[in-house]
Image (cartoon, rainbow, N blue to C red):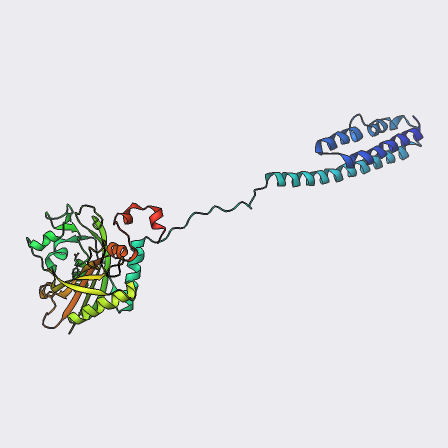
Length: 348
Ligand code: DAH
């Protein structure tokens, strides 16, 4: 092999490198090319090793050619390596991509329970009429639930409320409130007249579940105390409230009744939602549905909180929120409020 042979062998290899390296299909193929062109058995390695057998005048030229060959081929390989790495990266990204275009599956959003909605709406109506809102405890004492409301021990009216007692203190001293009326007492103890307050909350009775009774239910209580409050104020408030809440075309009426904490007492009824007053099965042909009780605060109740009944008078009312919702939305069984059947709840 003389100098011309050696140079032409390198030339052939270079042409081959220029053809093959840019065509290498992947990184493995490229590594193969690199081995053939620059590895231990490559032409350039052979030429390099033989330089020492050449006449000294030829050695520098040959050394230069070998160096140039290695430099050019290495550059070609590196360029292709970068290209292939890019291609593979793009491929991998495409393959591993997370498809964010799927339709989103969000969690369904809930809403307030119908009874809570009714409570909040009623609070709004009463606040609009000038009332404040107060709350009291669900676990009460005999004093607030009965005694201060003019029902002393063994008063027959106590049996109107089937009481659930809590094992605390003296027997039958601590109980689950059977109505929201005890909150009236707490409000009167806390402040002086004028008072205009509504008191919503949960109540408990040892009732058997039927279409209109549940052992757990909600009431809203109302209390107005000032100088010169009359039964006319009570009737006017009930009527204003009925129109504001049920809409025009519905009206309220009061029927004489009895409650130990009011005198006189009345039952508060509204036009039947089903028949608009003409009489049907829902209202037992009367055209009216009973919502709750009301009356003028009994002087004994004022005495229990230290108000002078000669100076102040007042009225009170209390009605069931479930009953209210049933009346307004035509719900025929109170159990629907506790079943948590979404098909029912989603309607409101
Ligand atoms: N607390 C009574 C009940 O649960 C309802 C009631 C009647 C409340 C007359 C009152 C009232 O404030 O004046 O049956």
